[in-house]
Length: 407
Image (cartoon, rainbow, N blue to C red; front, side):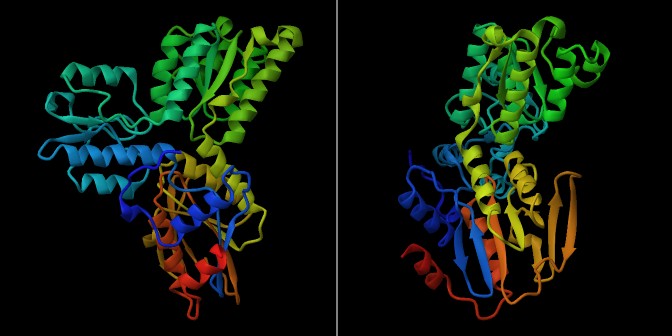
């Protein structure tokens, strides 16, 4: 796999070395067991896969290259390049400005841009409408386009489904940048509709089976389907694609659910005329990070800490998995840990910040699961590890622990 040139300050002495060692010992990525770092009074269970993925490293390399290649020019990002506040701050500190926020709200008006400006497309991609707007200003769209190749793979799949006359069901958050970008391409190829989760999928399935009427359908999906979407006609042939950062198991569950709907309506003999198998749109990195989290949860631990941006979809799903087994704290960086007795963290279900006291149990030895989202630098994860270690006297030094793991 390509090696990207990302700033050295995103790497870390411990985490990056462990990742490299695991790549050597497990080149086929079949082993999802965690790495154990035993510091004595504290032991960390480190996920097999986490942190920067291919798409994120690609986006970072292109974005920093844009800054280096254009001294004196105004440089803009359409919105957050990735959902990590530290990486975005590193770019804004270098003069990069955001044209809009993650919801699509305009921060800088298009009229303020000129053909001399540089615009970076974020890793999520952007809509066809925004692409055309950038072109109309005279700015080259693709020179600094950081769209993840795996997002583009979903777009290509949508085009193929449309050419085969299937309607498209998108598993995603309808207001997320990636889903908006995917929907803009999907709807020109085929009738398209967005479902957020299996609950919404089952509502759609109930309509397909005649169990609910058009009024209930419209109430839920009126702003989530393409123009002139005719549910009575357009749900006879379907295929499922996804926002690549969604929970992979849920995407598969939704796809399998609609397959069963079509089996029930049309039978095995006619299934291929009504349902397209689209499992190949699942992002490898999202899937690996989630499988690695399942590997973590097979181990016994006292708590889990998941590090990443609070608006990061893929990170929130790792939190969701960890919460099924043990106390889980979703934090953006080590600064959220105020002391051995207090941690500030984010409840993504309620979208609110919380503070928890005595989050580290009073034990002779504690075991902590540690992982992060796909847009979180290794250096931030290591800072969390070191912050916790600082509360415990007599911990083994990092070189000793690394030697135990690597030798």
